[in-house]
Length: 228
Image: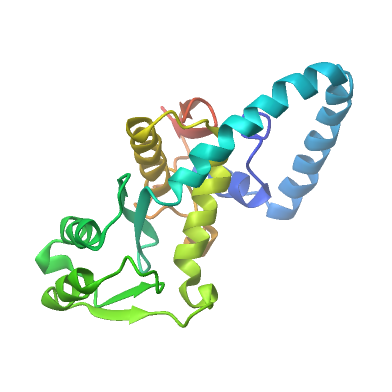
């Protein structure tokens, strides 16, 4: 599991093992996981230096422009009580009208949250505030320069980057939408969260019987383990 998922730390591995019915301490996993990481390092030392330079630099340069574009293309809506990713949308032209429409589509009228916590970006214009008010949602913009006041959403954005987008070269809007959709499904269903006591937003049952099978997610960047 550690080898198949190099982005996972001990807490993620521990959560996955708990869902497979293995009662083991996280401290023990951390010790074994650290040893597995260190044993992989000598193999990296044998890579030719010239090969590393030639392959890594063009990859980095090709990644910079798509990542800069993602900041203005993607919108994520997060349901704090459930800890789930409710809505992911992509556009090349984010406007107040577009954001208002995404909020309406993400939250049906009978399921609208009580509050909307957001930053003070100028794109949240009159159209957004009117739509939020009409849906009975209290608009709660955070203080200027205080991202910690929206810590759950900031954490989500960091997870999307570290666990997904930092490892892909985005080829366009359609490609980005497909990757974000796959990550959202992974984030909500199989991925375990420490804030949910090692459970998923859509709760996963503990499986204690059957052989273990793994399913690759996002091209093998992550794996989902089940017993059958």
